[in-house]
Length: 142
Image 1 (cartoon, helix red, strand yellow):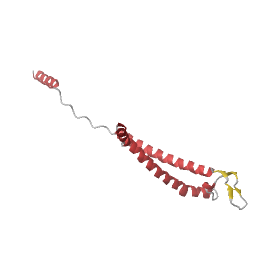
Image 2: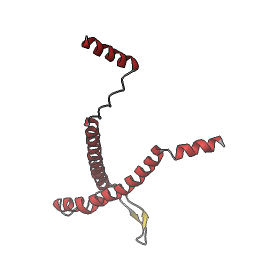
Image 3: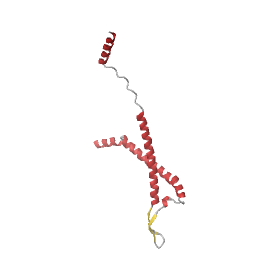
Image 4: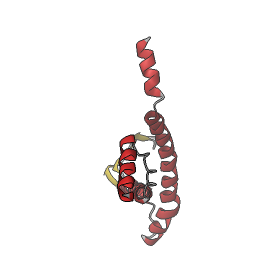
């Protein structure tokens, strides 16, 4: 029973839940970035490079082999460097957006730290301080 209780405490801690939410949002964000790169960034770059589709850029290491019926007997072996270039661009965009987000969060934290705390209310004088003030006042009268 103790192990189940420990697991429950672990699973509902804020950090674990925050991590799960981050992973889910990160997955969705990855799809958005991939679409941005594939559908918006890469087509103009492909046009500038003469209508090249980056996904199709590859080097053939071994051509496909056809059998007598004209069907593919052995698939071609290729290095898909176009996909690599696309993935590097995806990574650069994601890293830049995360950089901007962290920069914004740090800026907000600095502003919170710069706000001075309200001054503490004056403490009630102790009995000995009250007595000393009374003695001082009596001495002033004389």
